[in-house]
Amino acid sequence: MAIKMHQGLKQSQSLMITPQLQQAIKLLTLTHLEMTTLISQEMVENPMLEEMDGEMLSGAEEPSREELDAQEATSDSFSGPELIEGAKESFDWESYTESFNSASSSSPNMKESSSPEDMPSYENMVSKGQSLQEHLEWQLRMENLSAEHLNLALDIIGNIDDDGYLEVPFDDIVARNEVKDKDDALGMLGLVQHLDPVGCGAQNLEECLGVQARMLPERCPLVELIIERNLHDLEKKDYARIAKDFGVSKDKVKEAELIIMQLNPKPGRLVSAEETQYVVPDIFVAQVGGEFVVQVNDEGVPRLRISNLYKSLIKNSQSNTEAKEFVQDKLRAAMWLIKSIDNRQKTIYKVANSIVKTQQEFFKKGPAFLKPMILKDIAGEIGMHESTVSRVTTNKFMHTPIGTFELKYFFNAGIGGKNGGIDIAGESLKLKIKEMIANEDPKRPLSDQKISELLSTRDIVVARRTVAKYRESMGIAPSSKRKK
Image (cartoon, rainbow, N blue to C red; front, side):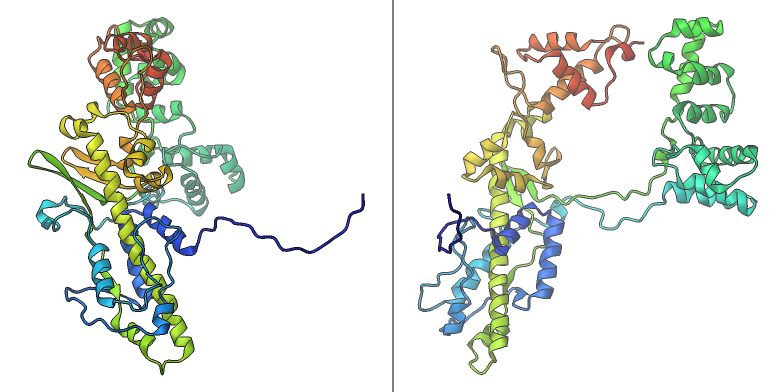
C-alpha cells in the first residue's frame, strides 16, 4: 500500500474557554476578600471602570459605529442574561448603566444592607507572632557562650520542627559543626532543651518527656523510670506489668500516670508564629418573622459603571485609531467584569437560598439535625451544573444565628440508610458517637461494635468499621485506651 502526503481542508467544532469565561469561573471560586481585592486591582488597571458615588447617569445618546463594534463582548459560553445586543442599531447607555450598576452590587430579592451594628465584628489587624526558633534564639543569646558553642546551639535550634523535635539526627549536626568534644555538644543540646518551652530539641517522645520530668518542682523517680522504660506499657494501660517491673503498687503507677499526663508531648506548639486567619462570610442568614432570610455580603464591593470620559473617546471622531482600539478593548473587559460580578452574586444567592430551604431543621435545632445533602441535589434545584455549585461552595462561609459554617459543611452523603435504616449525615453521626462516648461508663467504655449496635436501636444501621473511622477522625482513642 502506497503512502503519500496530501493537503486538505477540514471543518470541526471544539470547546474553547475564552479569557472572559476563565475570569468568570475564577470569580466564583474567590472568597469575599479576594474578590474585593481583584476588583480594586481591575479598577486601577482598567480606566473604563469607575465607582458610582450615588448620582445616576443621564442622557441617552446615539452611539457611533465604533461604539457598536465595541459591544461584541458576547456571553455564549456563560449562563445568565445577555450583556450586549449587537444587533440593535442604537444603544441606550442610560438604561444599560442603570440596569448593570444596580445589579452589580446587590443581590436579588433583598432589602438594603443592615447597619454595621447588626453585622458580626471582625479583627481587621493582626500582628505577626514570634516563631519557635526566634523565641529559643532570643533566650540563647542571653547565655555567655563561645562562638563555637553558639553556632552549634543555633544549628540545633534551626533544625527543630514546629512540634519541638529535632528534624535531623543529632550526630549529623555535631559532624557538620566539627565539634571535637562530644560532651560539649551534649551540653549544648541539654542547654537548648532546658530553654522555654522545656523539652524542645528532643529526638523522641521519651527524651522530650524525660527532660520535662526532671524539671518538675518535685522530682519523682518513678515517673522518670516509667518514661524511660515503660512508656509503651503505660499507653496500653498495662498497670500490672509496670507495677511488677518496679515493685510498686498499681495505685503508685496511676499516680505517676497523672503526673505524666500533665507533661506536654509537643512543647513547640506552645510558641507559634502563625497568624490568626479571620474569615469574612459571603452570606448572612437571619431569622425574620420565623423565616430564615438569605443576604449576600456586598460590603466592600464597589458599584461599578463605565466611565463617561472614556465613552466620549469612542464617539470622538478625531481620536486616533490606536486610542480607540485601546478604549474598545478596555470597554469589553469592563463590561464583562461587571456582568461576572453580577452573576457571581446571583449564583451564590441561589445556592445559599437552596441550602437554607433544605436544611431548615439544622438552622432551628442545630448540627445534630443536619440532613444528608449532595451537590447534585442543589444543582438540580437551581438548574446549574454540579461543578458550578462546587466552585461556589469552595472557601465560602455562611454566618447563621447558630454560628459561622463553610458551605462545604452542609454537604454530607447519607449514612445508615440500608436495611430499612434512616439516612443520617456524617456530621450528625459524629455528634451521636461523641455523645455516646461522653456518657459512657469510664470503667466499661463502649467498643466500636457496641456503639454500632446502640445506633441500630435508633434505626441507624452503621457498620463497626464506619464507627471506628468517624471516632478516629474526631481524635478519640479506642475503648481499650479509654478505660479507667
